[in-house]
Amino acid sequence: MSSAIVVLSLAVANLIAAQSCHAFDIKAGVSKESGPFDLFKFGFNAQKNGQTQDAVEAYRYAAEKGHTGSRWALANMYADGDGVVKNDYEAFKIYSEIANQGVEPGSEDTVYFVNALVSLAGYYRTGIPGSPVKADLIQARQLYFQAASAFGYPDAQFDLAKMMLSGEGGRRNVQQAKKWLNVARKNGHPGAMALFGHVIFDEGQTARGLAFMTAAMDKCAPKDCKWIEDMQEKAFSLADEKERRVAVALVPQVQQQP
Image (tube, rainbow, N blue to C red; front, side):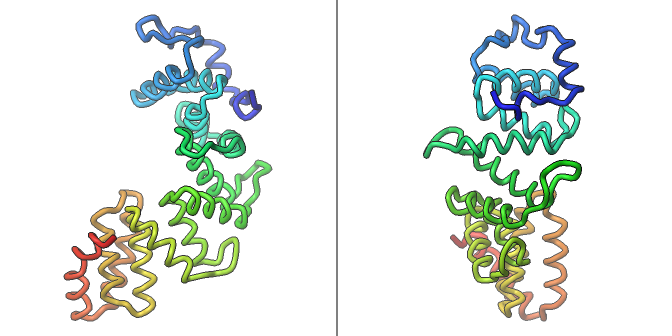
């Protein structure tokens, strides 16, 4: 068992040591000796119901038995401070373990592996203060590229494109960025649709670019709606009346465009 799973924060370790196994009572039909998938399901349901301490314990036991999904879930809890003290370096170590173990083609663990790659890329993009993990934009860009190209992951395609547009981790490449944004928006990523529209708007495709930004506003996740709306409103103010009318007419077309 790797140190990435063994090393828990002191607060959680004390909590688990102090608890009996009442979290896995007979009514649940689960104990620490249960199979890893049963423990994972128990942890998932406990977390969903707000019983985060029980979830941590279940994921920990399942992770010790080699269950990749439980390792990933435990890393997410450290990254989010959900049921444990937030600890990005602990999350980083567990994500690294998942990434380093690789994945068999078609494996059910693929989703955890790809999400671990993307999470690691995010940490390398910024670094983790007070830890050995320093910002490494080249590594971040490579990890996004792996998840984007080998696994077709839309979030990675979007973040890779943003790094290419800004020249982070390598040379600036607008054409490659447009390619990845186009792929990601075809895969249903509203942020990629909006940014693709913004790029072609700046290139002179005013009505079509504005149409993509407008269409993205109908599909955006709450965390993204504000920046997409701000970008669309700025573009709208720069377009003339004819371009605005054409853009509105194009919205249904770009929403359905493959």
